[in-house]
Length: 305
Length: 294
Image (cartoon, rainbow over all chains, first blue to last red; front, side, top):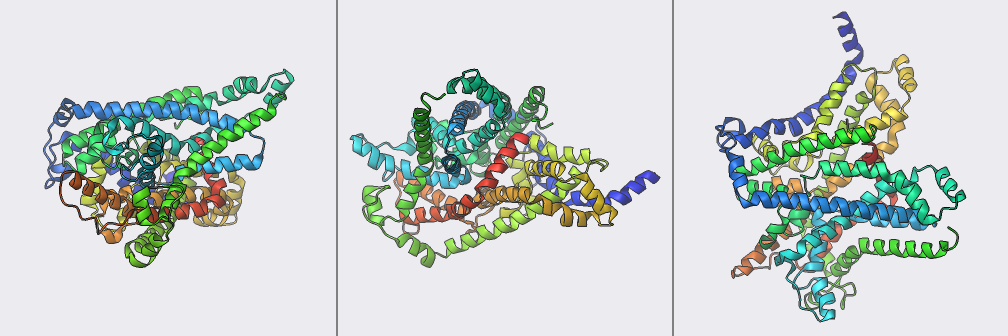
């Protein structure tokens, strides 16, 4: 006990520093975690989360009987798979090409400009998209399609184009960010490896294949695993704000996050909305932990735990 | 390597120029249409080369529309206050985590870390903020939920402290009789300015760009930040369009015209575009360090 008292006397200011963060995390993160029990109750506003009667897995049963459940899970998974695959391939390719550029000023400029879309909010993105896609005066209908003599397209009422539009916007916004991750790794590759390759007579393509790509391998694996850990999450802004909450598009824009929001705020279906949210949290948790356990096997320095 | 060095350089540069153009073209269209005469926008649509220029939209925003000036002020205040509070919380949590001799620091590390693995999701958070804390239509709604502290940033800062602040420096200050708070604010922080700048920029960007807290917790238009204002204008237009499709009569008189909306959007990105070129280095560092070193 004496040593405990002694320690406390020496370290109490450091413990005191933790207090604001501990309180904030408790409120912002831990109370809502306890609140997931709402998915197992028949919520009514007067009794609140902790007073409403239990109802077992009823909310989940109702949710998974609907077609919505299949659609939102399918959309969330498929969009994420395409974002991860295409996003990684393009980011690695662009990072390699950027690294090959000799002129330092140009290099810096390209990197700076390509990151710009990453810095703006999805609300702004939705206005930019509207400038191109508006059916009455958008750039594509009024300038491009008109010049080709094609009929204007009612973009916000035609679902078949949106898988492409959403992928393009996601890549456009995220390319600079992802590219920097890989470019930073390339910059860290030992230069003597390239010198040795040149001595061995390797041309540029052979250098990329035998030095750069192997050097990127573990970063690619780690970032992909991390992304797979988040495959049940989606960017609410991209799927709700950018399609402008358009009803006819819901079949291709509904993800778990937009479903939870719509259930909570618009259709007032808190039971199914919270069931979908809890399903997302729990599957997401399992995936993140699994992904990190694998990452730890690949490279223990990069894993979260 | 030597034979087609030049050809490859040309190819690489053309490709990067193409990507750079793709990255900025939408912004050019945006700025151009904000300077386009409203009538030209209606007849020609959005255009990179407007047939008739006009500064009407900006005059309107700055003189006739109090919501915009107000929204700008709110965005600025929220960004500044939020970033300062966030940095304070982050520093205060990260510093003791970096002190290896502190007993029980692993418990605090896990307490922080677990929030990255698991989350209660929107429904319980929303019910807590609105029913327990009653933050609806208060400025707390823009400042507190989700944004005040981020486990990734804390870990990034802890890693910086561990790597860049020698134990000997802290020990020497302790021997001199400095208190722990004195050591943190007088000795450690002056050595940690690059990471404070990096995290401060990322946090400031998150506050300036946030509109989701406004979507969840605000419906009083006197509290709208610029992003929330933009989001709400779009929402009003959506519902008008839906009414029009249903055959109802539509009154668009109260809504800002196309060029005014574009000018408003320009205002929403302007501070980022002004600050970014000077702070580019810190952004890039923050991204590269943050994601690889977790």
